[in-house]
Each structure stands twice: as C-alpha cells, then as structure tokens.
Image 1 (spheres, rainbow, N blue to C red):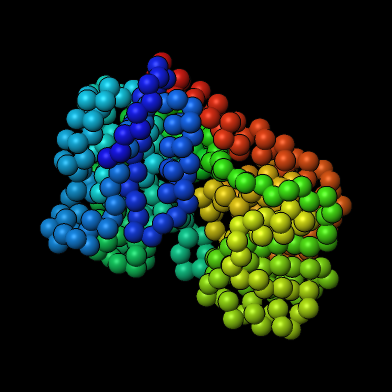
Image 2 (cartoon, rainbow, N blue to C red; image 1 turned 135 degrees about the vertical axis):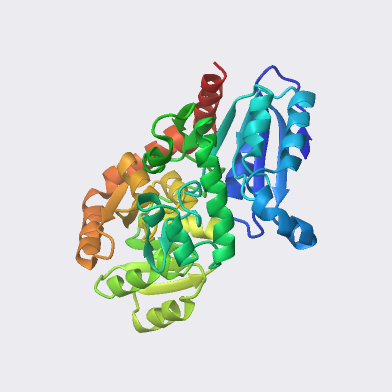
Length: 392
C-alpha cells in the first residue's frame, strides 16, 4: 500500500489494482490515472496486489479457486484503509484474481461508492478478449460460460478456466456486478456489457484512456508513407498487412517484434516499399508517425483501448483500421481515419484511397479528438465529473 499525502478538500480516492506477472496497458492506465489525480490535488491511497505472490506461496495457489471468488484478506484490509484514510471513492482497475470482488463488498460495508474501469471483457469471457483459435469469439456471451471450459480458454487449462467460470457464475448469481458503477472506455465496450448489466448497474459512464505524450517538434512536411507499430503476431493483422501491401505502391514502415519477424524481414528484402525497422526509441517512432499519411492498425480482435491511436491523433495522423472492435469505434467516432472490412484486401486498398483523398480533414479531426478527449487536462474533467456523479 502506498499513500500520496496531498492536503486538499477534493475527493479522497482509493486506487485498486491487481498486477499481472506480465505488464500491459492496464498497468500504464493505472499509473497514468494515479499521476493525473495526484497532480490535480487529490488524496490518494493505493491498494495493489501482484500475481507474483502466487509463485511464493503454494497455499495461495491452492486457495485461489476460493480466494478469487472472495478474498477475506482483501475485504479486511480494504475496510481498514477506507476507515483510516476516510476514503470517499474506491476506484478499481483490475481485481482478478487476488483482490477479487470482495473489494466491492468492503466498500459497500463502509458505505463508500465503487467505480470499476472496464479494461477488457473478463466479466463476460474468461480469457477476457473475445478471441480464440485465430478469430473473434463470443460463444460465452451468446451460449453460456460452459463454452470456455470446452475450449480451455483461460491459459489453455480446463482447471484454470473452471476457476474463472466459477467466479463469474457466483457473482452473477448474487448480483455483484449490478451493485457498482462502471467506466467504459468506449461505446463498443458498454454495448457488450449490456448483456450482463441490462441497465441495472448503479451507474454507467464512458471515459477513454489518455496518455502523457512528449510530442516531437512540429513536422511540417507530410511524406507519402504509412506506419505500423505493434507486435508482429497474426492477431495484430501483420500477415494480412504484408499480403495486402504487395499490391500497394506506397512506402510502409514497420516497427515491432514478434512471431512474424522473419516474414516481415523477408518482405522488406523482396519488396523495396516495405521497410522493417524493429524497435526504435519512442521519439524516433513519433517522428515517423508525424510524417505519415496514416497509422495502420490492422488488428483482428476487439482490442482494449490502443494507446498508439491516441499518439497518432496527437501527431495529427489519421488511423486506418479494420471495422471491428474498439479501434473502429474510436476512429469512426472521431472521424479521424478510414476503416475496411476485416480480411478484405479490396476494402483495405479502398480505405487507403479514402485516406489519400480526405487526409487533411482526417488529420484535423485527429488532432481535435486528441485535444478534446485524450489530453490529461481534458480527461481529468471527465473523470472528475464521474466522481461527482457517483457521490450524489
């Protein structure tokens, strides 16, 4: 537990997060919001746990099927913190698996409102991403959670999947998920959760992620290039991108690493308009994005909230993505780029043409979206209004 002592009359916030053993975007968002609230004068208390605990204790591993449903350790500790620190709001990011939904009940016992930021689809899908075997999958949403057991969706383990399924079933049964407030990152996320909440949650709000970005100096010249940044994996659409780009007479610069690194390297050798640059410092990558006609984001699953899209918008660069998931929701809402039909090369090429024709409009819209929604200042106004609403 970490306390940031700011002498202020603003809301006193307990920030809650369960760290995975492998870092990810949720950890970045948690850190960003801590910084944001601290800079704006809030008194913060941090309650975190780390899945690394499981490697240090066989007992914790054995008890996980029960503690993931309800952790008495979390319940006791969070109640003490709320009372001692006079907490006004409990803001949860990730509670799986060690913190558990017991944090909601600890806050409820202390009559303090809870808001849960939804970073993924864990409450609906045991693996949290609606993706398996190379394609999007909503079987658990449409046919029931038993589908995940059949497919070993969580870590390819039937036992570990059963742990998650039991947690979800229990808390659905007792109505836990309808007793708290939610922050959804996009309309797309909120729509998916309508199945579970049915409009019966305490409060539902939409607030995107944001990013602290050190922008490079203004790049006035817009060269005729396109940029891909990300893991070189099939679900990120890299194979589709390489195959499609063979028919496109424009410069493509690829940054990243992963399973398809060799394929990307081969393409860069055989096609002079494809350039593989591997990993580069962020400021150098930003310079390429700022000079690009578009950031290409061909991911084939729903994603969470890709921070690279915010970075592109900040640099006045449109985004080209498949018409699927949160990425399409973000791009279409901002009118800051073009979308194409998933897996359709003709549609992809047409989207490139769309970018070429309406680049100036998309570029202006991208920057406008960044300034109105994704800067720390703009995002704080949204978060503060949510806090005020849930305390009424």
